[in-house]
Length: 173
Image 1 (cartoon, rainbow, N blue to C red):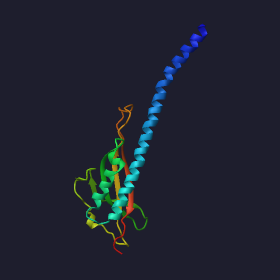
Image 2 (cartoon, rainbow, N blue to C red; image 1 turned 90 degrees about the vertical axis):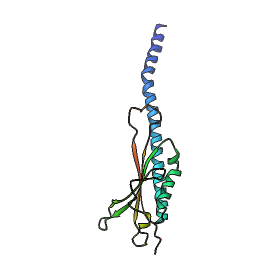
Image 3 (tube, one colour; image 1 turned 90 degrees about the horizontal axis):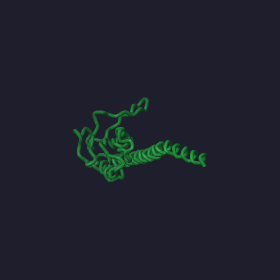
Image 4 (cartoon, rainbow, N blue to C red; image 1 turned 180 degrees about the vertical axis):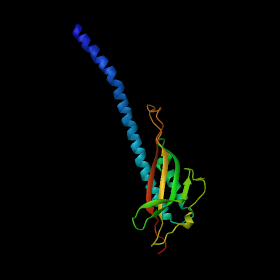
């Protein structure tokens, strides 16, 4: 009947209008899920690298061990994120307020392969690991999340950071 044909045509037009929106929503939720997975992986790896640095204390290879932890982790081997830089730095704590700030004079920057960017401004051997005044250490992993599906190719890939703070384990009591 002519009415049934019109209804089928109307349904086809409505489907053609809704399908692109549904595809964008589906692909967008997939990208968001992968981004959240990359973010949580980076946060975990930053904490793991900080724990390794804390336990290594003032050992000469403390920074190497931390960068190796990042490199050997899922974040260092995945296509979901590209690690740009690993920063290891000293933190200062205000004795009155307890506020923590980065000591910009004591920052070491590394590439994922372990090579130094610039110079080492806070050599591991100079770190305080006494029980009463152990240094605070921070690790920042700077990474890029490349879009996985290509739908958002016109939008620049987001550059993100995972940050973790920890006190060095006392090795002198």
